[in-house]
Length: 192
Image 1 (cartoon, rainbow, N blue to C red):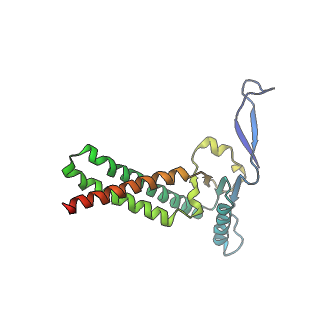
Image 2: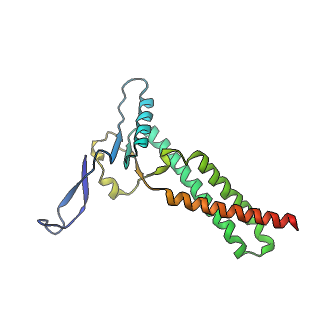
Image 3: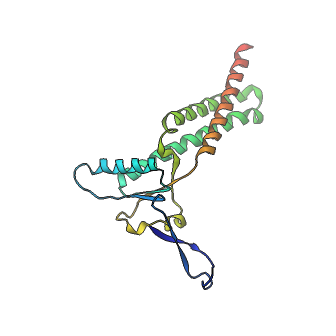
């Protein structure tokens, strides 16, 4: 599979007007084609997507609209949980610095609990799902490098595999710090 890459000046190129072809290996891109072969076509699409996710292709193009939309929503919910865990945990940790100590726990404790809840839910529901390693690609330049000309669908969902190790470390660290703060603050409130 080959796709057009970025412009590069090189030997024999005339001022950047020529485009160099960038080839993708067979392990880089997988396309779940929308071909209906019988009654269980949706099950076949889901099976193909699952196999592609487990095979860890760099790009997965999903032609069937229903499965593509469901996958994009699932990824969006996971992203929302991650961002909520990080933002709520940050609010929990920095509220005592911005508000008077007598009132800060009214915001910081609920924010800490929210951060911990989102982090826990993400850990239970998304952490071991192979779909959490992917993000929906919207960048037109990156999409132009993929073999989308072979598709029958005009609105495919394109997933790109991204390393989420730092992302998980970030929200786990912030949620853990928020938990420690909440436990300490609750102890202070009820021990006095």
